[in-house]
Length: 529
Image (cartoon, rainbow, N blue to C red; front, side, top):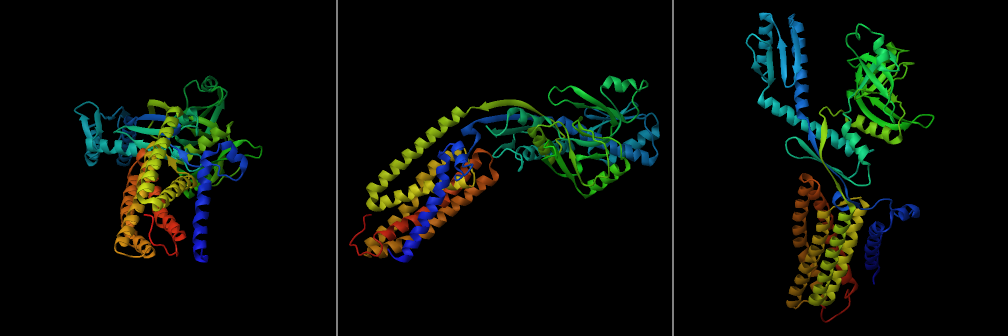
């Protein structure tokens, strides 16, 4: 063996051994991997269909999105009427209608003129009674589509959050008003997952005007009713849900979570979990002015009408702050995820819930492995009989291909799904195809009376672009499937893409290396092909 050939063989063997190390980690129990300190902590992930998990179909209450849009238009109309010095008797949103009760004719005309300028509204009833407006059909469709996009984006950011999220989960649209969510088992409890859906994520900071241990005691201080523009919010015990404190706060928030740029779980100096948050520059300025003007006042931190903490403002606070409460680590982590993802303005409900059992996945894995082994045995038998020693070379390259395929997927922690298993079986069938092209080219050169050594060199050179062309076009198709597909389709595309790359490497590098080892530079009369 020449020095150059030895270097090539060493590099290929070293690469196969390193990647094979990651492939082997999948067959070692997790406890053993962690205890060894050498093997990777995680290998190839299993999808929902192989390891089980949670399957949800969520209904999105898009009627709420329409009500929010009407409330926005109500505010715009109210501001316009104030600017024009026009007053009305009543201006409110009632279900899917914007209702304006105006007895004075000038006020009615002003409202009608404003509505005519906004083509997003159409008049439902008028005459001498209250004016009622609904969203136009085109704008109603736009509002519902926008609501679905917002729900999908927030759920994806919460469930697939890069810091505390659930890897390899699926969140995709299903129909006009439903969302499909699939969460692989063992990564989050069902209760924690439900909490991510239940929490809408509307964060508000409100100055506390008064407080008492219960709602009754607080209301007793105001026999004539609560002051205008105020409401009562509660701080509950996280374990018993019992009311700890009732706070009188303004209905409108002084600062909202819309200004947040980041939120993370941390620990205070007593090692209790807290949630640290950061405002953007505008939010930091508002928060700084608010805290500077209200030193000594309590500030309620309210998420979805629940007070998490109400600390005293001791000094000016800039763009950074923290939420303290009697959190568990998981509660603090979940709260940070919700705050980072943003508010879920449109509520969702679980319409269908299924639990995919791991036993079904184990049976699928078993059948997939059996199919792969059967395909491998048949291909090795065919190649060995039809191509003799060269067929054994192709079989060795095929085994290397499988090791590389599993190892690369493990190295990048790719997800193996049931369609991905089909991709593995397909890769086994396709892997020998490149070798067949090479061997037939070599046979043609031998028939043209070339020496074995020249036939091998020419066969590989002529087959190179044929193999590359066929595999590049297939790879492009796999990339398109991954980009535009979801769930199972992406799982198949991942396996197929990696399988294409490892197949080409095995055929053009490993098989050629075996021919270089034997016959190599030896003078032989014929090839075993």
